[in-house]
Amino acid sequence: MFLIPNKEARECRLHAEHCEDKARLQSDPQFRQDFLEMQQRWLSLARSYGFLERLELLSAVEAKIIRRAPDNQGRGLAEN
Image 1: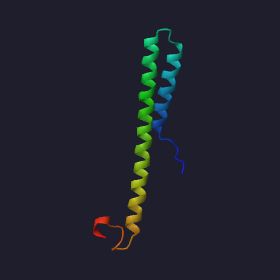
Image 2 (image 1 turned 90 degrees about the horizontal axis):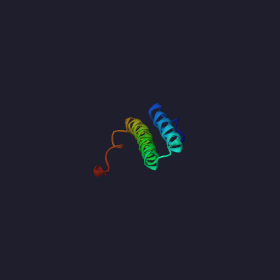
Image 3 (image 1 turned 135 degrees about the vertical axis):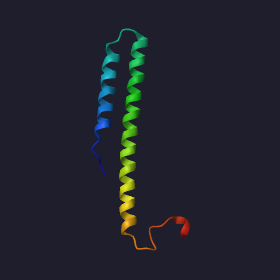
Image 4 (image 1 turned 180 degrees about the vertical axis):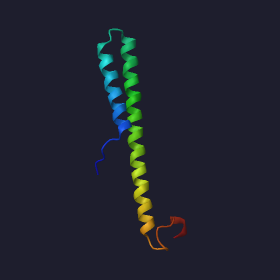
């Protein structure tokens, strides 16, 4: 299943691209490294938003399955 990235993740990736562009323009190696590190932080945040979105989707699917299950099914594994 392919999900359309949420707005927050797209914005984070856009910030990451800007950081990469700024890093390329830097003549100072330290500034270049700072922008590249900031790019990685933005990408990490984008992945976190993606993970959260998938987790919410999975939770919604699981809740839907549990609601459809007969009374004796859909309960925790400990009761089996």
